[in-house]
Image 1 (spheres, rainbow, N blue to C red):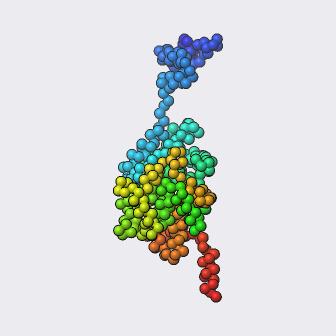
Image 2 (cartoon, one colour):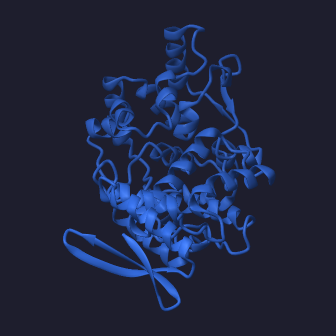
Length: 372
């Protein structure tokens, strides 16, 4: 390869596989052109295209764009969130948010490689990602529910809202993308027949599921609170379970739930099995809670209990126990204030959300009969 002047710039001349190539170096000074030719000679001797491209990046690194690089966005988020007091969340929540962020960055690298900064993540790009997660099947080979999509887009929105404090050019592109129509049948209450079948299946399968179901049925606690329930929160003398639910901890809302006889007996049995060695009531559930790996999914999955009980349908999950508890309270005539105290609701609207109409026809018939 040699260089020569042509007009105001220097050009290079080289041969490759019997073919002559000529092109401008873009250099007006001879020494700059010779440096260019030397570097190109090094690139030509590379063993593969990948090595050649790597050498080009070394000699001519891409210009750094103004803005917050995607690779630095998470650290910027945690820094600002910590400074503003918004990072006071449990480790599991932060880990889940980081996983959601990392999956989005992987999708971004594969589908929008030109996007290099947080400023360049625009509404149309966020919209494409929302479409992507809506079409991507979950581990159970099902499309994600509206609630799952809400959670994913909500986590990303939380990150980008915080990043708005880092750069004036950053706007939250995920606002308004969460599906409004949450799955109508999600979290249906169990019928009494289903309750019996599930309890029988849970007892047969083991793994602490019977105790977990009994706690959920008779307290309305969420699964996360049950998996993390400590023996120090179970007061056998007062015959109550007293704790601050994780979801309402930031509101300072605690619950105290009396233990009915079947629940007390089940907890005493669990206590007898472990003695004073375990801090947690259900150590196996504590171990796997929050673990989204395939092995954890196979080791401890409530769907195994539902399948064994013959309870099918996308609307049934462990959270259905909470809806069941609220429905049974309503059947027993408990007022809304009582339900709020027991279940730890933060608003009347949320308490009404758990009023299921399983016995609506029976109630209407009773009212009509009273009119006669």
